[in-house]
Image (tube, rainbow, N blue to C red):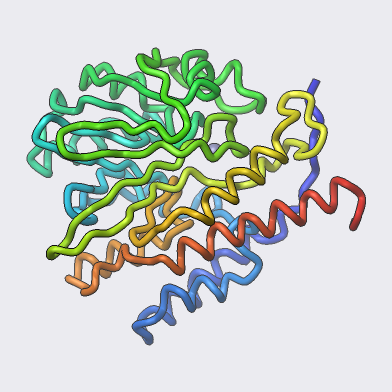
Length: 315
Ligand SMILES: [Zn+2]
């Protein structure tokens, strides 16, 4: 039995106009990313690009983000990351199955081999992050890893998720990872931070990257969006959801982040940063600690507001 929380989605249309305004401002100011985000006002939970938004369908070219980290995303709304090492490579998120051929060809365009991909990771076990895992595992032979509470969801193709939505090709999870475990390949060390709430095994990965002799803390942020059709408080399918979110926010706020990457492009102005990177912007446009704090704070405000509503403190 599922309890449903009704949320009025007043803001989908607003996103486009804010986006347009923000894009215009980006052309006018160098300090524009922070400004454009502030313009979006209420916070990241309040909007999402509409179903027909071009960022969901228009294919993008692969890109070196920093050091050994690349975007191999098919489209900017659903980022996929490739981390390369001399001992083999790591993919984080495969998005939807239909995008896997583009992601695979992006890896090859960068000059890397599919059979050198050793690990297949995910930010969380929803169709738009793991829908392509089975096909990518087939293409690469990579070892799949996930937190236990996401692993069974991936292996059931979404069937065992607490949310009753989204089904995809099931994929075997070869290795269970735990909170704060280090995933090592070559000289790259990724730390897995369990930041549950949006999914029970939602995982934010961190690592250190180097650029021009400087070291940067990188975060691949799993996402703290309130599940729109699910009760936050007293959800029989996920009783600990409020506590998990609270713990995740505390951890995320304590995480040092310079390079901010995430599970959806609009959470970190991916489109704009791609354009800036292509134009050779310096410093690296993906250095965005303010953007990271903005998104975490925004999601936390949405969480607190939802708690207040569901506990009957406001209507
Ligand atoms: Zn999700």
